[in-house]
Image 1 (cartoon, rainbow, N blue to C red):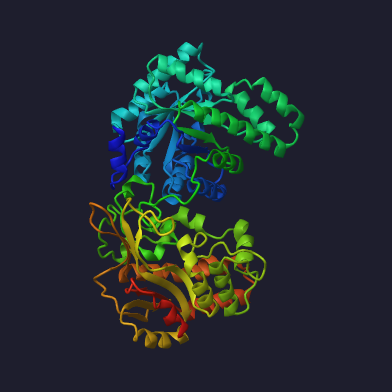
Image 2: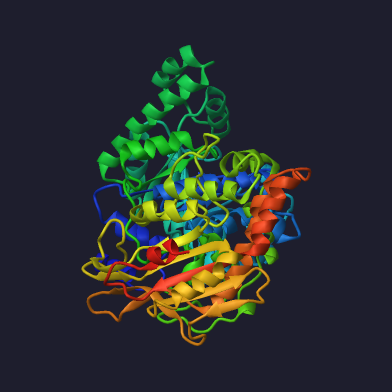
Length: 617
């Protein structure tokens, strides 16, 4: 595929495979990406520690992540009990990071391998690192697979080019190989069997990688070769890993580390500097399009290195759509979403994960049964829940104790204003907002602070935008040389005793659409056409139809309101102990007596009237 073809595929809604992305980046003389490796935790309970780690590297701009496999799980009957499979599901579908799974084949039957590959297809995984695995870990005497090349050939035979396949390369040589020549021939067998690229085992000196690439090219191995980089985290971990991989540590490294071997912080700082120097040599060579980091499930060292090398996002990346695009290939054609979940995208993706088709071009009527219940997705429910470990952090943000509704108003105001609450802690999130406010909301901070201070508790908003260039760093999205538009939107909870006044004020603003409902759902007010969604974000681009990626509609709002009200009790109230009756009763009162409201100002070319409406309550 030519560079022009690859770039064209990025501009459409077609799926772009990891292999295609590597081809594109390999045509550039500069290192343009990094990727990461994680290993699954030993227990289910530890999964909630891994998710923020994966999320952080997605936000930093990792091209993909790889998840290791343990050969001792090959005998498991229930495939979904394998933690590696659960972790790739989370990384791809919960964190929206393109994900590769390591698969070992030794001791595995062909039927079991097919079952695993089919499960991976169902999840949406399309990238595999094909490995033989440790002979000592094999639990079966089956001879279906003896080498990694057998697994590569097996996958290609059954799935063609559906999966991007990587294989492992050993710059020194595999410990079981007689010599380098034999090792390189084995690697060539894996490539000839259908591997798309190679990820090397770790090394500490750039010349080792350069020699390895030269040796591979000399015998006709022409696929991309990504260097595997392990930041030195501690003396013990370095010793253990080099012992297992039978690597020799450079004399200079030993000499420098020996005086500080008992000081983990000093070793980590030294390891970061050593790795930055190594990576700069690799980047300067022009031999690799990217760097693959063995993180050891730690964040600081790799993050520091990537930022120093400036190969991650140095600013907000340009978005193909206003909302975060999913990494799962099944959603690549998705171009329309309701605005209600814009601050809880993980929830929306889980609730729609089983859809056969995703809205493209226009939002049709989607009735509530089509949205799965979050209770059906046990993994999401577990990751989204309050645990004993994070309860203390949430109480610091949302209040150690609540005495009155105004205590809740204060927390909302602190969040939208970006200031510490009265307890001295920054409110970084709310149950309805997974992260801090989007940059486009900065222009609304003064208005948002004022209305929240007065008990109008906002959970979603966007300013009006009239024909801003699509490359704008704050509001921009989509193809170059286009123009984007937005209608002003605000969504909030407000006490039921103010609804009469709100409806009276709204009668004076015919260009404002509204939806108003209570927790019970028995009271619902709207002036929307239930058959027709409203576009609240759209874009005009050269050579394309108008794109309308964000809408407001009645059916989706009724689904969202169930989730929105439930968060008062399921996410906020549960941070307080059972005997804190006062705090829980405050939240129960709000949940039972407040209404959920959304307003759309259709007069987008002019200053919005929404804040004037709220000022009159």
